[in-house]
Length: 324
Image (cartoon, rainbow, N blue to C red; front, top):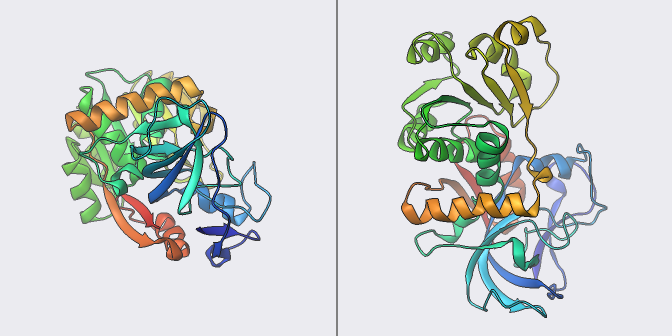
């Protein structure tokens, strides 16, 4: 089969398209013929060697994909060949990922892809939707009637968070950096969408919350925005950090004066049971039409390097997907 591999850590040029053996499923596993692969920022960190837990090269990146079950390992009874599925994580972890024509997954971490969703949309579900679900509910404690601001709402996780939040009855504000991104945020259900490039955009958020500030902020770039988030957050509000690319200096008195909470979220800490609960909500949301994954760009598998450039570029708009 064809697969993208990293033979040495470095810039996107180290992603090479190779011929490798097709993996076979073991006990409790399924083989998936991949139709679409999601590209996530974390894969660029791993590829560059700037991540805490690194695989040993050569390795195949990727954790999110959608496709069709093509073979069953011993003991698998809940799936049949031909079933449309999506998944988060492969059985071999980061050494044999999803940037390939086939992969092998634990059967319990494969989920049904409704007919209403395309394979490209299915590839947009794994990391973004589970991260958004975990950030909003498991970590952020979001409740109907509260106001959430999603800082960087036009990317894969941001749009998922907008859709989840609107579905459960939150008041939703989102930021983006381009007019096209703002249009996507509005189309996904945000009540308020403002440009974080505008000089007084925080005042617009305050005005939209009658001066109180949001109860919950989902932060995609904490090293740039966290100190301003502390100026904006409501009394006893929560700031959930989803993304960060460096250090920042903050004034802890802002946390004290608002009795605010700063909470981290990392999807890799979720248990199998927590993932199953998140994806059960994802499937239900897809079937109800409440969740509508946005695919911003589709590229051939051979153009994985372009996908890594695109997912890290400013002004992201939906999910970057590779097509084997």
